[in-house]
Length: 111
View 1 (cartoon, rainbow, N blue to C red):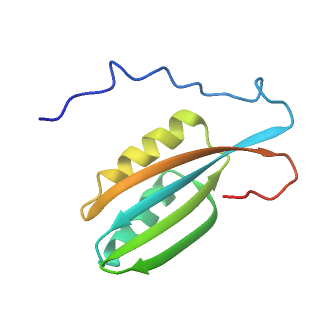
View 2 (tube, rainbow, N blue to C red):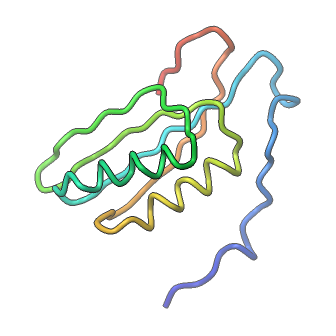
């Protein structure tokens, strides 16, 4: 039985700039799917429709699955959460995970 967690989830802060001045928030989506490359192109279409700024995108094969690591910038916390939910709902996706990173302005992300 699936439970709706929206009522119990904490509120999402849309703007974190006031918390850590001089830092930017980036997001890394980890997406795991079967070996169907169609999932990669479908994910790309979702990112394009959401006008997501992709910094890096790596796709690796690990046994019988594809692992995608997508690093996004210029996105609010709420946008990132909604994007992860859209990607998780794609046909063939086994799981997704989102990492949120504060990166010092002007430095490279470690994600």
